[in-house]
Length: 100
Image (tube, rainbow, N blue to C red; front, side, top):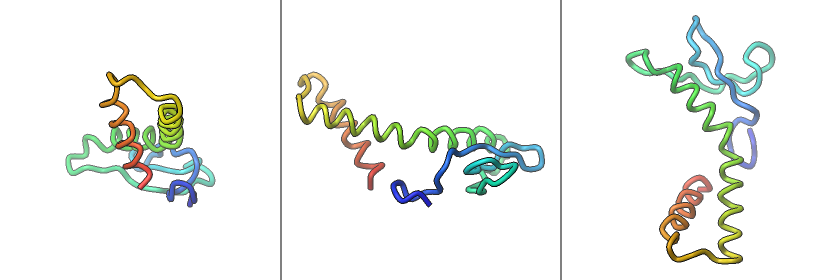
């Protein structure tokens, strides 16, 4: 478990089960990986796409949060034009969601 994000650490990957790429793994699914989850749906049509989406989102999470924190730190230090206040508030709200 990663203490910073409270999730299984590592680069997540999509793995196969019965020929369908619906498993989500931390590490290498063929050697020493940890099976994290299975992305399925009732129709069976979206499991592979859902798994790929979850893996992309999880792998980008820490970098996206760091980028948002950096942006907020700059805005707090030097300010920002009033014309982008709505967008700045949106970034702050989004960052608040992922940090809670």
